[in-house]
Structure formats: structure tokens, C-alpha cells
Length: 477
Image (cartoon, rainbow, N blue to C red; front, top):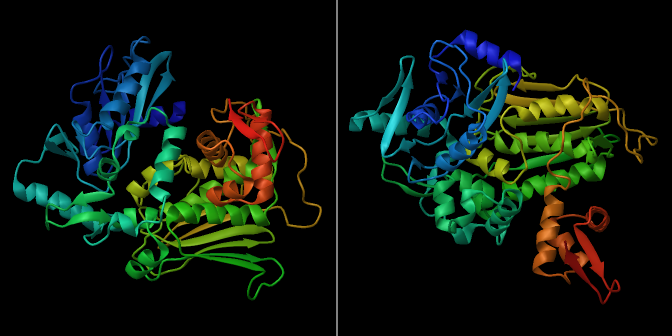
């Protein structure tokens, strides 16, 4: 969070999407009334440690980190906030004082706190008391988010085998302390907003979000026949294509397919960030791929495309715009088009928090292609263009580089391994004699990729090979 951003919030003052709260030694009792109201209305931003008039009071250093943990735990406790919705809080330093910044996205569901439903107006938070007020809140949410559509005859047997277990396993690896980890599958679906009851109509069942995230291709095709992602390479044959992947599987598997397509056709370049080498290609295109899957308007039949040209990568997807025009770091407020789909992708580490993805593309493409002329244009069709160095035979990156990206990139990296490598560790912990062929299938990756991952994990002292190649086994460290 930049100092300038805080200054703008203080100048803007409290309103329908901004709230200040004193919190010197303990969380305000009404904090989650505001969180709930923001979820139910248009989202908003909360600064703890600030008086109503904008005066900076600060938070006691001894409790500020605990505040963030309490907020995360309370937001994931369905006995308090229902349906629960994970809220991340950040500690900020401003004018030599500690503050806590909370970004609350607009939700696709109606939430209650301690059994009461709150809404937001310019005067603050208020309780919805009448049946008509509550009904109108549900109707408004249903109209805003197509991912909320309920399919009463969609069942768990309609999900691709193992995909739910895989997602939950990744969350356990990526976020070991996540409150979802102790829930049953049924509780997980309800808490994540993937199974709901519409109080306005009485319908109950899995939602479109659940279908898209986990469904079998034929089930998705029957419910959303226009759904597909067309991945193309047009470098030599501009009229048709040099290579193509017509993707019609669920979003979890679609992400893997698209990232494999990127790895197949675009060279990689490793960058030294702090003490760790990172893949610039993965940093950039995980954001582009996640964006076209998470934020698409799935009731629109416009086909989603992902096309690799000689000098750029371009993607288009149907959109329900919140703003119109070009998005650049610092000039837009993030707005989730499918909040529950976005939440799952965030929890498994396949996308950043809202707004960070655009920043990452600008940041890392400065090194990858020496340009900041990236385009994110939000209209009825969302257009993303990532310029590339012109693809030619001598564009290969065999050695790590450490060039500046506007400013030196020296921040620590919390995850020296990526999600696929974490999955490999988990699979080897379950079966230390698993074959490379089995790892290829479960990770949806090629032989050389798996071998490279295994080598890296050994170099990081996370894996150790015991015995000969054919008769030995793996030991996770």
C-alpha cells in the first residue's frame, strides 16, 4: 500500500465505500458490521487506526499483527460472518504510526454478521429489518452475478474425478492454516459460496461457479454450450494457425492447459528476485490466463481467445464492465466479476489479489520484453495485449539476468517453488515410488518439465533420491 494511496483515502473521507475506525488496542466492535455492509453493497476500503475525521491515531505495535489474524479468522467463521468470505488485512506504516488497511470486495452473495444483514449508505451501515428489504438485496445480487445461478440438478457426480480433492490439497499445501482445511466437502462448498439457497425463490443447489470450476466437460457443455477457450499460435500461418488447443474443460484444468500452451510456445527467462530465481514467463502469463478465466461473463456467447503472435500475446473475453477504458496500475479500482471463482483461484495461488495482476504484468514485462506498453482495456469485450520481443531463433534465455524493473526488485519471495512443484512434493509424500509418467499425468506437464522440477526441488533440499533410479525411492525433506 503506497503512502499516496492512504493520503487519497484520507482526503476522500468517509463515504459509501470508505470507512475509518479507531483501533488503538482492540478491534472495533462494529468492524464486521462495516465489512458485511461493504460485501453486500459495492465493496469498500477500511483504515483502522484513524478517527472519523481522518486524524491519524495509530495502532499499538504489540497488537497490530494480531489484528490481521483476528480479521482473517473472523471472516472465515460462518458462525459470525455467513456465508464466510476470507478478508485479508495489511499492516501499513504512515507518518511513523501503524495502521491496518482492509480491502473488502463486493460479493456475489448476501452476507450476515451474527444473524443480521447489513447494507451501506453514505451515512454508514444499517441493518435490513423488513422481509422486503432482505428480498431486494437477494434480487440485486442475483441480477449482478451470473456465477450465482443455481443448478438444482447438478450433483457432485457431475464433477471431474479428483478435481475437488486436488483443489483442497493445494489449499492445504499453499495455506496450511486456512480455515477451509478442517471443513467437510459439503461445508467447503457452502462456505466458499459454491452451494447456496436463494431465499427469494427457494431454489437450492450448486452454482454456475461450482460447475465451471469442477464440472466434467460434457456437463459444462450441456449447461453452457458456448463455453470454450480457443488458444492459437499465429506466427507463420496468419490466416489460420500454427498450433491450436480448443479447451472446453473446467476452469481448474483449463488453467493448466493454457499455461502448458504458453510454456510450449514462449521462451522463458529467469529473473533473480532477492535470492531466488523466478520465471518471468510464469509471473506474467499466470495473470493473463487467470484473468480470462476468472473475469469472463459466462452468459455471453462471445468466444474467449488467447492468441500468440510474433510480437504480442492477445486475449479477448466477454465482459460485464464496471468501468470503461484502459486500465493501468494506479488508475482503477479492482472489481471482481465472479467473486467466488476468483476466491478459489486466489486460495490455490493461481492469481493474486484483485488489482495486483495488472501491476505484475507491467512490472515483469519490463524485463521480459523491455516494454511497458501493455494494454488492459475494459469494455463489453475485455482486451489484453502483452507485447513481446519479436520471436526469432536467437531469442533464448539460458542464463539468469538481474536487470532493474523500474525499481530494483529486491523484495523477499515467500514461495521458492511454484504450485506445480508443491503438488509434486505432496504426491511424493503420499507415494515415494511414484513414476515420472504418473507425475506427468497428475500435474498435466511434460517429461522434461517434471525432470526439471525434481532437479530444482533436490537443489532446494526439499527432496532427496534414495537408491538407484529404477529401484530407489524419493524422500521428502
